[in-house]
Length: 333
Image (cartoon, rainbow, N blue to C red):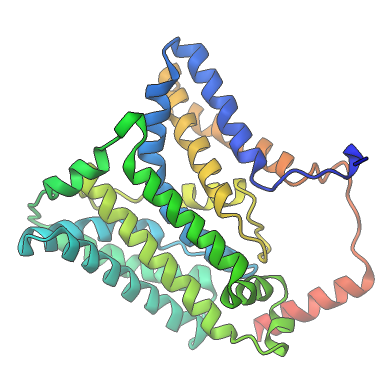
């Protein structure tokens, strides 16, 4: 018979539990049916999930890896896709142009990180400034509208289930399978767990870092292109997606220290944030009050997801401390 004390919940459990609690509170406050609320949540969440999946790959590659350019790349993808789609008459070419731009901007970060030895947060911040300048130049006198067919698909929700959400769910499954069943996935997670050991084992560390940052850039640009087609392009369209993408990844169970990626948890975190925003707007809280409450709720979810570390804190062994210090010294070099 299995002991309850030895039972552990999947790392994505707490993000979905938090989303369900917020959904119940929304029903209690609004008194309306839940179908419309869920449809709206699943309509908006996929864009955040796309950015979150890319950020998850980067953060899984070990401590210090983060991409703070995703918000600006998101906005650039939206502007560029609409402009190219308008000029060519093809939304496919528009999405392709956005993906290529995300790849190119991420390549700048990769070169800065791997060859100039700039810390990831500084390298991606510099990239975000470059992307912002390009977006502002592109936005001057900008006129364009999304392709009606693409916009119609993004708004299509047969039986109350957004079709685009189904596509992103399938993409999430593919990412999960790649991480779990492919050699590249195992190498990436091993690299995130112990960078030096992975290098000794023959893992091509530079290839791993390049791949995760390039994927993150492409995902962010495509998410921005699709979001702009759903609503409207804007240079500030991606501003909220930077911090939100980091939060949904961590809430979803991905470790900040790297080595564990939880794609399903990104969905739980995204739904939690989307539903929470709707609840706070429904209550009528001002912006400052919303941020305070969101901060406390995020901390609560992280506390539960980490297994209440305050109640069961263990001091690291001397050997572990020495090894961690050696790895940190090697990373600095």
